[in-house]
Amino acid sequence: MTVRTRFAPSPTGYLHVGGARTALFSYLFARRHGGQFVLRIEDTDLERSTAESVNAIMEGLTWLGLDYDEGPFFQTERFERYQQVVDDLLERGLAYRCDCPKERLDRLRDTQMAAKVKPRYDGHCRGREIDPEQPHVVRFKNPVDGAVIVDDLIRGRVPFANTELDDLIIRRSDGSPTYNLTVVVDDADMAITHVIRGDDHLNNTPRQINILKALGHEPPRYAHVPMILGPDGKRLSKRHGAVSVVSYRDNGYLPEALLNYLVRLGWSHGDQEVFSLDEMIALFDISDVNTAASAFNVEKLDWLNQHYIQHGEPKHIARLLSPHMGELGIDPAEDGPELVDVVMAQAARAKTLKELAAISAFCYRDFEDYDEAAAKKHLRPVARPALEGLRAELEMLALEDWEPETLHRVVERVAEELELNMGKVAQPLRVAVVGRAASPGIDVTLQLVGKDATLRRIDRALAFIDARAANA
Ligand code: GLU
Image 1 (cartoon, rainbow, N blue to C red):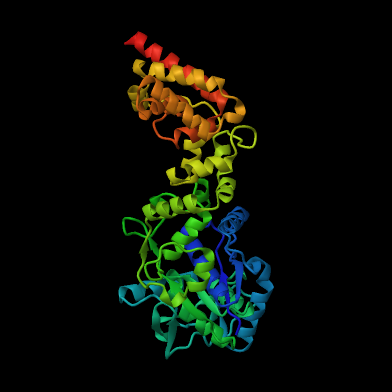
Image 2: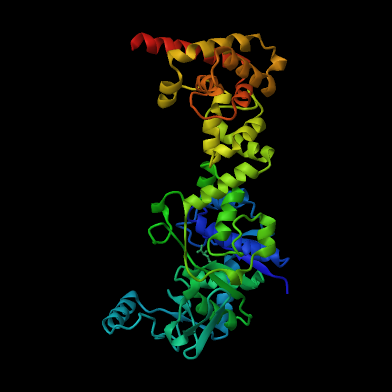
């Protein structure tokens, strides 16, 4: 048997982290078993489905690198097929037309509610002949007794009594098919062997199994993934901040970090925290997924993101960093240092690419203001001789000597001449060229900033010191 899984989002919004985790689990399961992963867009809700949302979902999947083998299939392109199936069920007496007016259904519901029983259709039209030309819906004839056992790969055996399930509508009065029908037809037609989805669908599963059986299909295996909770213990949603996958990209997260984070939400392998995609594929087993909901924890995601920034291939990180520099109006290809050198110097200092861009802007353009505390501490009149000495020496350096070793020696020499320790020279210089008291080693920092900008910024620092002294 070839394993076939699917991701079946309804395009009524962006791809959120919960959906992405479901997609990831389905993807990993298919890859692990050498199977296929299918993308199906469940766009039958014409009012809420949008093309932008389809694009946003695909954009999210592409960014995460969750490539699908087949699809996207669109349910709106399969209406004829659904009609065929409903007609066939009608013909075989496994479904029936119902013209119960709304008032009757409302009354039924009210009576049931008053009697404290679960509202359900009473099968009134089961044996009635209804003119197909008159307005009606079509209902599935659910078995009236017995039970459906959902043998879930995550939750184990979950029994449902058929008396709990009513004859659900499979075709609306406007002729459109309903969710439970389309899912079943598609899962059967697409030869899906494993349905991995959110556990909000668990209650649909016995209904879907009954329909599948009526159609003469062996139901697939099901795995219902528990939900993701926000820090307050409630289902993760927009209220908790960014939940769209693409917003993580825009905020400077690496796809490998988000994937790694998502796979660990509800799944573990010993105490290993870091997984490459290949390792996930080799190790992931859907039956190891927890039954309990998992809580979204941004600190852990940040930790993983920092890990991948620091240990990733610098060229790869530079490629991902480039648009974040662009956001700051910097085009690293234009002039200034190679972005990959900036990455190598700075990778340990940032949790996100956005932060990395912000703390690296000084390599490409003059900063606006000094960090107040850093300037107060290091740009004082006592630092003047050091900065002047440095300026004189640095100015004389030939461009080909503008490299860490020589630069380091210059700073060292100036410190020696003034009988100051290195810090007393390097810190004012750092604040002068970076605007802050933190940066890579001073030699690497100067190299990244370049000669012209270094001299210009030292002049600016000297002027700043004088202006402060004059105002004091
Ligand atoms: N379209 C459904 C949703 O987005 C998923 C259906 C399924 O996976 O069976 O919630």
